[in-house]
Image (cartoon, rainbow, N blue to C red; front, side):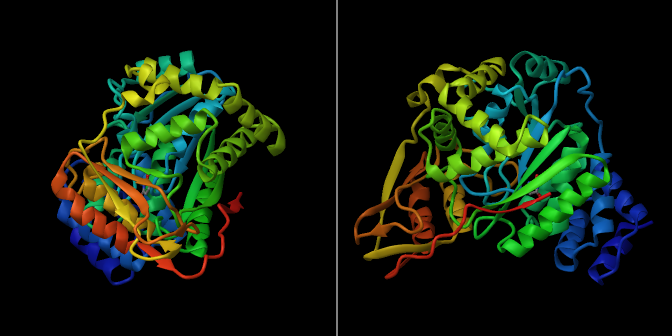
Length: 433
Ligand code: URA
């Protein structure tokens, strides 16, 4: 078998066999297939798509590309949620402590930022001392003690995805349905959780721009999960505007903490409550209504925030930073961005806002770039808000003053002001079970 022939077959619209898919994934993982051939195949898949059968085979090959961790010594039901990626999407930092505080076990392996979207691991690393690399024993130990641990995807877990994820990030091949589905589900199946809730984003900040595409992606992932016997469902949630006001790593941790204190932005709170309730319900903790009440109770009585603090401490982070978020270092430079005209924010190009945050240093342009944890954006006005010319609509933060001009330009170009208020959009579009 030759990689050249596999690329050519997909480029010409052919359907790859399970053997060809496995040849690619195994060869790429072992370093025998170079990045340029893997990138060419990803681009061919991007343009030619894959059938559900091919996507399932790709997922299984990704799952089997490394070691499968043994979490059998974790007592209780292990739950996970996975977002397809968004801007200002800090839901994992809120949802996972909530469900852990209500008795679920969270042994979560998360990703780094990808394209214009942020990643939970980068966010957590903005907390002083927080370790996102733990060996399996320590990881299991922390989950058994505190109910929750979140680490980066280990080198051994679905290593094919780790390499492909970084490659896709810099070759404009992220937003492909089979590549996203196999990336997410390959990892989820390798981690072998009992219940999985997928948060499939839709809109201008998501990899899937329309509700129809998001629904299709959700259906593919739920089908793959069910085919291998998982309890799995998906919510399709809005990403036509950032979730909350904060975009960028430490800024998002601070907003997540505020949400766990019960003072978070309404949109973020609503989506987090829905995800956590559905997760508990899927795990058999009660009816959806009972689970929703329990989730709201865990926020109100502080137990969800206490679960986050316990996790931070157990993973070497300074829990004082969670108790007092003013300890997070501030970026050296900031700039107010002002509206150029009177009117309403009728829409935003959310991907553009994610890119502006990346331009400030909050994300990576190449796979080895270092992140500026305090860089990012605080939105002051969001879609639907009325603005006056000269009024501040956002604040930019960075430690590299030279980045401000381009980021400001990107933010303004991504914010559309018009005379009439836009129609409101739902935050949660559908459930796929
Ligand atoms: N999240 C993932 O884990 N993989 C993708 O491809 C996109 C979002």
